[in-house]
Amino acid sequence: MSLVKEKMKRVQVSFSDSQWNLIEKLKGEMGISDAEVVRNVIIAWLSEKSFISSKIKKEKL
Image 1 (spheres, rainbow, N blue to C red):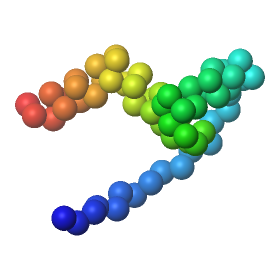
Image 2 (image 1 turned 120 degrees about the horizontal axis):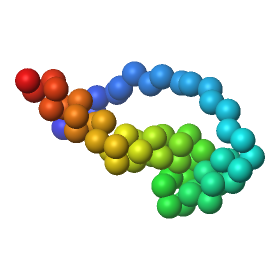
Image 3 (image 1 turned 90 degrees about the vertical axis):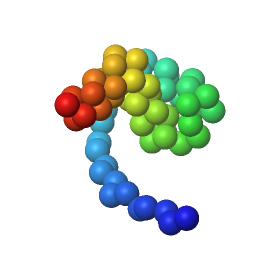
């Protein structure tokens, strides 16, 4: 089984103190590192709003 190394993109984002406090509270539940928590929050939000499934459906047409 081969592992495919994906190209990573880095972005810089800013959060208010209250936003960051929420992210800190999610550590352990949605990831260990700051980046992992933020990435997982974004993926969860995209999934909840059906952006991911909508994109897949459009690509299949």
